[in-house]
Image 1 (cartoon, rainbow, N blue to C red):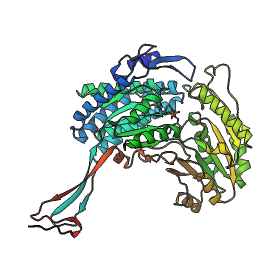
Image 2: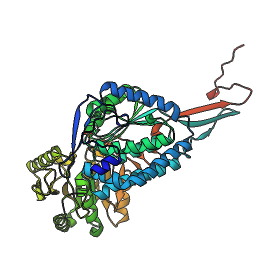
Image 3: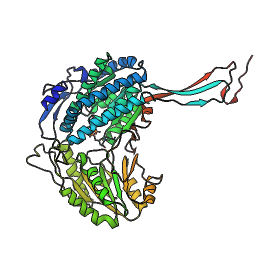
Length: 509
Ligand code: NAD
């Protein structure tokens, strides 16, 4: 790992930095970053101070004045170069993500691939930031709308996607003409710093100011400072619903804009017409992939009563075959949780479920000894539950799957929807009436609704996000770019008269 850190200029094991690329020493709080894989220290890092934070904001403001003058396709070209650098660094960055966060190497590499893909998308988008033209009600008038950049886009990211979610935001925000200020999770700062180093080289090669892509290291306090800063017109925040409510309140008070990507509590409905050969792998990947630490992880399984026994039998037998251990070893299916706090949350949720009437069908164990010395490895767990249990409505960021039964599809959809969160959902069925009912306006109330595909694993081409306590934001593909720009409606009069709208007469001598 030292070699990889060195390649990204993150050389010292006690790396001290307040603002990412500027490498200013800081007196802020120190975070010790230990890998959840083996518990070893990756490095130490200091939080930015309030003064350091304000300096970075000033540099970003200055950089914006240059960046916004570049034509959008030229900005796209810079993003293209960044994507090409990511291709060159994919193996190293993916490995660092995997080691720092604990997700499998395949998923670490997959994160970097998502970054590359969103760069490609953004390059194309840089020639397609279309506005509409409308017919005016007045003669010899023309109406059109155009889109302008906002300024600084503040990006707060969560530990579970240490780099990809930033890129979803940054690549789009850049081609739209904004500069980005990133506050990565204080649990995974080294992966973030590696991305900064890559972009720094691209900017340097093009004689562009570093402030186009800047970073502040810090925890909740720095995140709060970002939310409160009136020089940051848009804050895009990914993390827990608790965090999102705080950011929404603070940014709302100053009438700034937010994109909120918050907690999920995603369900799969398995109907009597489901093909279990497809459903089982999708359920298992959704529930135990990334050790249940995806916002789109499958947390609830809503199964038609006629399929319940066979499904439980097949699931339990698949869970028994899961290999748990070092995520850098491709043979393992499940790696560690991010830290011991997360292990405590796992235990607490299982105990609460039991108190509320749940029955553990598999799992409920913290793994000990070699190779589990970091203390962060747990056995994925299946709990027989009922939808009324309070814990079932709560997102626990761990591999715990609540399984429950239903009799009619209406009932299954009601269970799917009857939680505060609204991120991802899916139905397994070969019956078109069932799939269409699930996708109809009376069906799933989530931002993502899939048929014969699990809840996790989204493609960058679609707009990603969820409803209700998931925050309502949309990122990545489709027309999500519009949230990163301000819309301006323009009316031009090229005639010799001065007619008013709505036929109003305002004549005077
Ligand atoms: P978290 O809320 O603890 O932290 C996320 C980020 O917010 C961190 O950078 C943290 O420093 C910052 N933060 C915390 N409190 C803040 C505050 N009051 N003001 C400003 N910033 C603050 O979340 P986490 O544990 O890192 O990540 C797990 C959570 O993220 C889960 O709930 C998961 O569902 C969610 N998530 C959602 C999506 C999505 O797209 N919907 C994607 C990834 C993760």
